Length: 111
Image 1: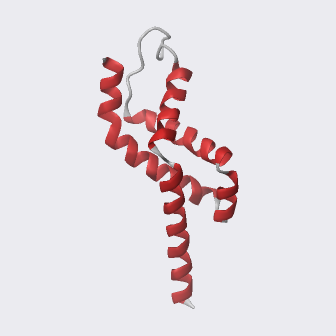
Image 2: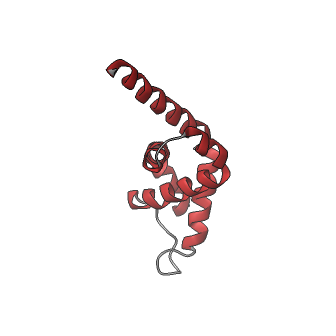
């Protein structure tokens, strides 16, 4: 029945959004930013500080997806969703945060 299928899809989307909201926190995002800073060290050439740009969003998403998978493994399993759906929900939250905080990240690096 189409009505049941739509309800199931909406329930799944709601569960994914709720899970992403609970797991993609400012604290976890800060840890991801710190991890990427450490990984990049002195920037691309090893000397110049890294300047954040929109191109850095995808590495942060990748870090976040991996961190949530490890740290929240039971919750991820309980979602019972496809890997791509999980990645998409986490990625959406990271993108929203990154766009809202990009100027702040750049200012912090230049300070």
